[in-house]
Length: 89
Figure 1 (cartoon, rainbow, N blue to C red):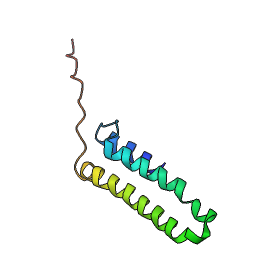
Figure 2 (figure 1 turned 90 degrees about the vertical axis):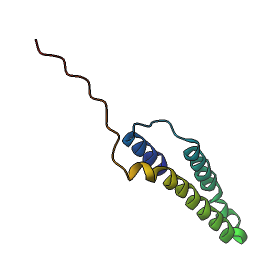
Figure 3 (figure 1 turned 30 degrees about the vertical axis):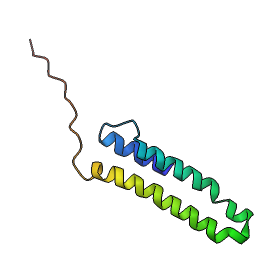
Figure 4 (figure 1 turned 90 degrees about the horizontal axis):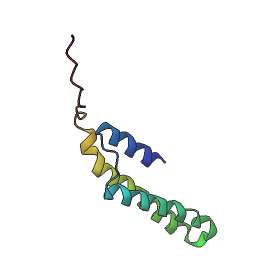
């Protein structure tokens, strides 16, 4: 949810509503490792490996998000078009 809100907020900052492929890959990775993480409780013998895989997936997902969105957030906001004022009569 946090990744989705950050994507929406940064997209609104740049008037970019549709998510790019990198963002979609980040969502898939994050959802996958969110489902993998509870397996550590079900298989205690592999818990360390499962937690490490989950941590690496979270790091990768947020890293991809950062690589894609930081350039947008480090520069000024896109100027919005202003409607031309109607001439007064």
